[in-house]
Structure formats: C-alpha cells, structure tokens
Length: 189
Image (cartoon, rainbow, N blue to C red; front, side):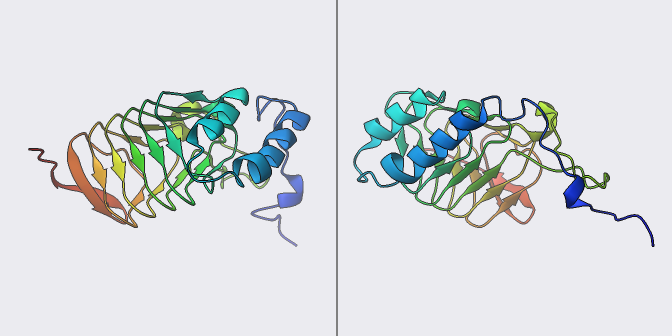
C-alpha cells in the first residue's frame, strides 16, 4: 500500500499558532455567537467595543454587521469609516489589514490562511508574506468576492461581484473575474 498524499490524522496545530490560549479563543467564539451575533443591526459601537476587547484594531466610525464572522480578531485591523457587510467572513488565521473607507460587501470571504498541499500532514502555511491580506484605503469589494491568502488590493480598487482574487490587484482599477483581473481605470468625478 502506498503512502497517503494527504493524511489528516497527522495534522497538528502548531504551538502558538492562534497567538492566544485556547480558553481565550473559545470565549471569543462564544461571544461572537451571542453578544456580537445577536446584537441589533444599529449597534455598531457595541460590536466594535467587543472586537477591541478581543484585540482587534478598530478605527472610528467602523460598521461591522452582526452576521459578519471574524476568526481571530486579534489578527485584524479595520481603518476609519470602513464597513464589513452581512455574512462577510474574515478568516484571519494570519493578519487581515483593512484600510480606511473600505467597503467589504455582503458575503465576501477573506481567507488569510492555507495548507501546504505538498506535505502529507497538510501543515498550515505560516509565512505572513504568503498568507497576510491587505486591503488598502478606499477599496470596494462588491458582493461575494473571495480574496485568497497573500493578496494586497491597491488603494481605490473596485473588485466586481463574485470575483475571485488570487493575486494582488493594482490601485485605482476596476477588477473582476475569476481570477480577477484589472479591466479599466476607476475614474472619479
């Protein structure tokens, strides 16, 4: 019998990976499911306060909807006057940095984590340069955009609905597709 290509029984979470003790992680998940997730839509300040208590860097005037999900808030920063829409997921196994005046629309999925598919133990990829996501100021991620690990989206870019972003995108461009590509300049009046 040959060796397995992928042996999930051999997978191990590396020491210190979550950057917080297991009890702290479980507390966040409980708070997110209750006090955060069940809060009325208008209680942005309350949700921002909860995120800050769990280590997120949250700017002023930030609007995070109650149905948004953030895996590890202590690995997330969100700049002034940015929005995170309903059903959006910030899968923050590594850093996710969102700039100022950014709109992360409904059901977007920012995935700052991956596995090494060349290893049978399916180990996490833990190099921040390969997994960190940066969404620069004034970006609009339209509905249901997927952003993969290691991507930077340049200032003022627009990413069209249902696009998949696997490579960094330039500033001030309208981008869409799967994979997303820069299609035309973003012209503002």
